[in-house]
Image 1 (cartoon, rainbow, N blue to C red):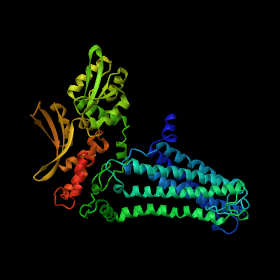
Image 2: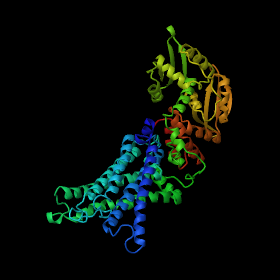
Image 3: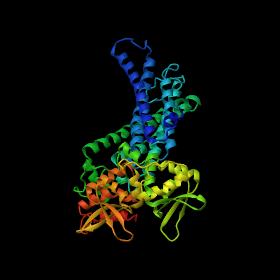
Image 4: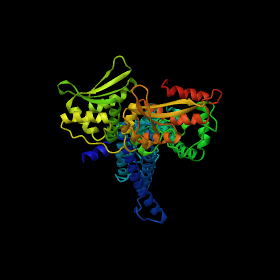
Length: 551
């Protein structure tokens, strides 16, 4: 029961909240549809049919139907459900900027639905129309509490939409993927972003308008009451400042779908000319079969993968994937050892640029992090016995390096832990990406005056590298230094297969930034942007700076 509450009632996951929005919008649509059916059945026959000549109830039903469909069905479905589900994915973000605010914005809709639907049946009902125009909504025309309930319901929906709009705007600005600019954002992202701004600017006006109406009804003010010096036209002006935003909001979303469906190439060309100054039509070739990675540059077109599986791959809280990756990292740049007096230790050494990676491991398993003197590296060390047991149980069955397995057997024996031998490596296992983060390399060099991309992984023992051929490529022995075996791929087809693996098992070190640039590399290479006299040579220089992590 508690797990159920955490997953749905108290959920902070943007996809779970999006599902709640969709379920809520569907239920509200059914409520609104039932009202519509009663109204149509009443009108299809002459005379009294269902409502027993209660014309005010009919007007109340018309009012409630419109408010429910607009504020409680259409807006939650289009903005809340689709926006929450796809916006973080389109931004290359793991979630919304404010997950708790996201949860609150949804649950504010529930009292809104209760208040608005109950207003139809309490006392005489609110037969004001969905605009709630004064003087029909005034205390003289509607003395019952039903209009007040509608106002409070509109307050709830306005608060919900305002919190959601703030969340979308902050997410778009602060949680974009690496190397992703506002001009690189998909049209879907732009439609949600613009809609959020429209809601943020217009909804407070509606809230102010109905609040002044509430005060006129209950606190003897005269903002709209002519008898007290007020002006009923003021409410109309305030309402239509919001009301004109509604069609514009839906126009923006509809325009997005139309443009992306029918004029995608034209719009992409236009945006690229503005953002990159001189992009040609040839560059703007869309490969519909090419899968795309998070934060890919504009020349790669489909900037962010929008599938659910990709978003899940980017969720670093996936324990299974994380543990597999960690085992690969330990196999590559880590070791287990037994110090004096049977002190157990596990250490991982990475480049100082990967300090955040070690902090992720520290947050999960404890330990300490220290910069190593005399080298550009940082070390994570785990000594605590309780934490060591947790670590070994997490990675048990995933350690496969011959030397590391021997070390693990020695440490696990002192802790009375049975070591599980690893299964055969496959592409669904994140171990290889961990080993790649430790021992891998992504680089390009010029061959025959043309840049050639290379992805390689080195290892001391041949038996530990033979499984790497599941990604194709070749294995060779390098005699330099102490000698090591090298797995290498350089063909575009093999590299794209490796990128596909990276989507579901993402790199967690600084190497991730280079992997994101690979599709851009292929696009620039195809149009020969590396040549000095090429029209797009500036884009190549910008890419080169990003590749070397200068910007």
